[in-house]
View 1 (cartoon, rainbow, N blue to C red):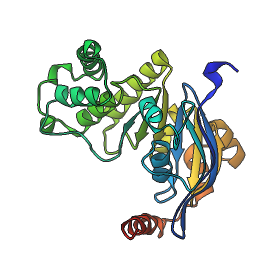
View 2 (view 1 turned 120 degrees about the vertical axis):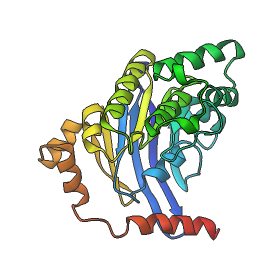
View 3 (view 1 turned 90 degrees about the horizontal axis):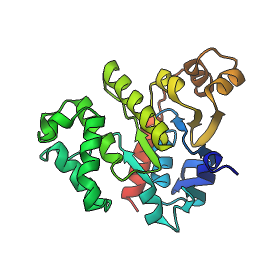
View 4 (view 1 turned 60 degrees about the vertical axis):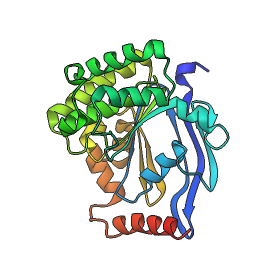
Length: 266
């Protein structure tokens, strides 16, 4: 099989339970190398739990995950070296400069000392923050912080970049800037992007493949055109609403609360 066509993420019969609560229920999917893959679903659907298993933060009850050819339970270090991640919640040290945040992360991932400075400066220029490299992050806008988090996630040249709601709260111009530049680096480095977003028009425009998860099960999987065709709708948003329902979820918050409570009581 052509290496470019081989899946870089393979999920088979994945299940995660918190006592009696089934957060992820026997799901299977693949992500090809070089794809932008959108993982969509309502709050409490199982997105975050799945990403935590893919990135070795929690272990599954059953099923198998291969990331860049490595088993997430048997080869955790190799899996972690294979990806970068930008969390939904801010994770920068605001008392450090942009350069210092990058330098700390590069050291953490054991980037060569000979290459580290060059890579940091290239990435800061890439995201348009080279002129602010010596400024404290606490002086940055939300969009600037997001750009810095993405640059930080790229410092060790990962094969996969996980983005959890990367453009949440950003203005249209910043969102456009981020996706344009991520597309550029994806093409030049053959990098895979695994993203979650609630901006469905964003996913429709940029994603090569989409999976929609609801109540722990994958209810749609394919390209935007395939999902729209199968649901006999006109847009991804229409398809999403048809599949997940138009009513506001009364149980979306309680599902997350239940998981947190179960973890606390362990």
